[in-house]
Image (cartoon, rainbow, N blue to C red):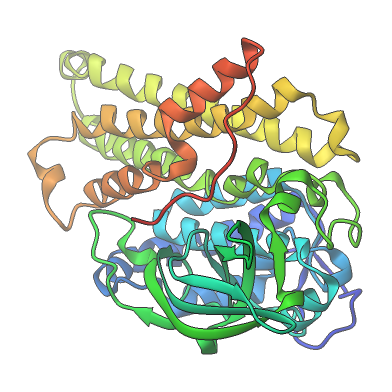
Length: 407
């Protein structure tokens, strides 16, 4: 694995990954162990602690963290590639990795004092709940949150901080949507993650009965959507001055793509083993199945290529204005298209996996369930995303972004 000396000079900082190729090599080195522990991780509803520790030691979690804070400062395209690579071995591992690695970008939209608080240890991991229930009101030099509850806190088992979204009830009766970052010590984790798929992510719910949040640990949603946050000027690159809704799902979209790729590869290898000594007639009888492998592989490759093209466009930009409105509109369209194509490809293969594919111990059915779970994410909603792009092409105004509800 290629690394560089840590330029931040901070004890305990991530090892630096010099290139995207080095990051992929680091991920690939972990794949055998990730695959070997995936069944146990699902049974535990908790990704192997050793796997997460190895990701820490490899520097992978710091992939898109700015170099000034001890990260590698690589791009979103590299994050997609690494997440997809991990997904070929285990969907839950890819999801947890992508979420936690991506949040090292999200925290840098907050004011500098919040960045200092959270990143005093540059190896800190951060989880999120984009929509937390409860009530937030201004109080002194900050905010008071009471009765908070929210679902889908992926990576909470490993995080030290959590970013949450909520609306502040202002004295004049208006509501100001904001994001906040809180230490995990103020949060109760609710063990309710019992799901059809993605079980090993441990994406449990959280509760916050009562917490004071200093003003500097908050960021308005309006600024995050406009690219005008307090942290936007502290780091180079357009990614800190773009609407966060145009970027956040890049951290997870690689997971379903990688899962589908892994499922197809495993099925193809299994089929090849069965047909290795078969005569020409037996092989010919499997032509339709072999064609499904070809079609599914093409769909998955196309899905990854489309997402990577968008990520590379963002990585190249030095100013958000370089990305045209229609190019911005295609980003969520392409997330949804890629995730749903991955789901469809997996379904095409699972349909011909035979009766043995339905057993709990079969890796194909676990991966199939995980893809179904991943593709359910709001960012991958087909109807919403396609309508949004259609509106843009037709010259109609976009639908205003809103923090999705958790129930």
